Image 1 (cartoon, helix red, strand yellow):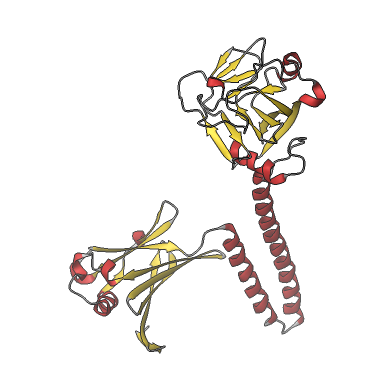
Image 2 (tube, helix red, strand yellow; image 1 turned 180 degrees about the vertical axis):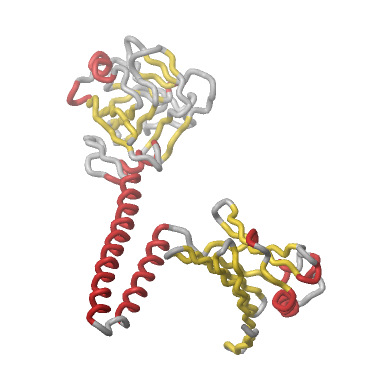
Length: 355
């Protein structure tokens, strides 16, 4: 193909295409010189999918290679076209499954590499689905041309059936991806504290895990099961992992997540994955320490997080305090005065499982 010069809005464009056989795959390399940039793109056809990679390189970028240091951008373009060829099959290499390296060597100086890093035009599932869908539509257009005889017509009907099946498969695939992504963000929680506020429920889901589906099973509700420490221990013994959700009299909503039980087992426990959180402040607080014991399970009282950042050592579970000076916090979880016991409206504890 000869180099073409095309006038476009007063700008000169030079284009050149080179075909190369790479890993037994016919590949088209397209060069374009426009304004102050050299554009290089390549298409790799594999089954139904065409992968497109591209890059735009300024004169300054290309001149970083010593060979081109004395050339203008137009001279660089002419030099590449007139004196270069594609390298053998290793010319295209995937790099971390994210970009493709297009290497060109100049005939006159042997195998000295001139390397351009081309990025994929698109790689997400939606783009792949659209690409496949467009190909299916192209097949349908081609099928219309085959209506010349009864035999051909029958063949077209059969092919159309296969196309419809393929479209259905593609639509199902797209729907499954969308459904799976939504389920990963969604948390079902039978909560008197959060009621129907799905945004707050999903925020707790993000605090625990963004990429896993989780299930929350209610084990204890203070207004339903009783407020004494014995009531709490009876229903929450050895429940792990667990989510503790609290709402105080001033409408503050906060709580904790731990992989160890808050009641039962050892008196002192350490969990580097544990955290406290406040929905009012939209914050998640991790432990500041790596080796110390941060969670205490009293035989006579309720849960205690080191330094009193979250503490149930009052008369029963209806009294809570948050010091804001312990292993987790630099501020209180509540708007009540830090370090003093205050009344709570509701407490819920959930057993967390991952699917």
